[in-house]
Image (cartoon, rainbow, N blue to C red; front, side, top):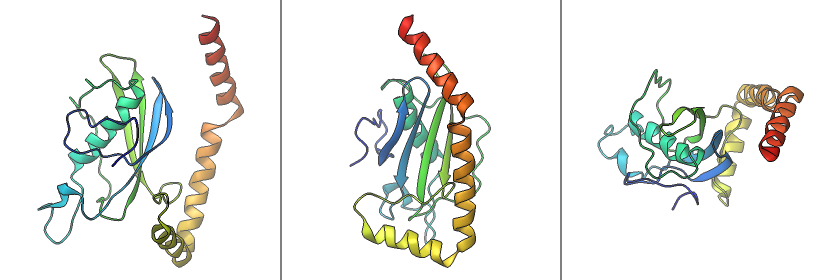
Length: 177
């Protein structure tokens, strides 16, 4: 299973559950709910499963293929300035965002993995996961407040009038070119 349109590109596992947004050549946003039965948890680490950092990087490459217009040849070749701030474990909901820094090929992209940054992701049609997220927010009102503050800031950044005017101007230039 996995997100339609996402390719593992030779990697043995599809690491993306759902594509949330995609603007080819610019950026893509996808979601991944980390399940306890993921094959890479075997032995990493016994008794305390943690997603290996290289798996997170590969998940970003799979999202990056969407940015690159579905380019199957896109592979991870270099990781610069990677920071892993907290372990990713079963039950975590991840937002995977990739932005093009340089048009390709060769592509240069920047990827960010977020869990609980602007909200809590739950898989579609999973009332248990939804109930768990609601209970998590009810038990930690400060978390809900922090999520809403970050979400408001992100909406202001992404949908400011300046940014929208720039997006429309870019679209019009492309249409008349």
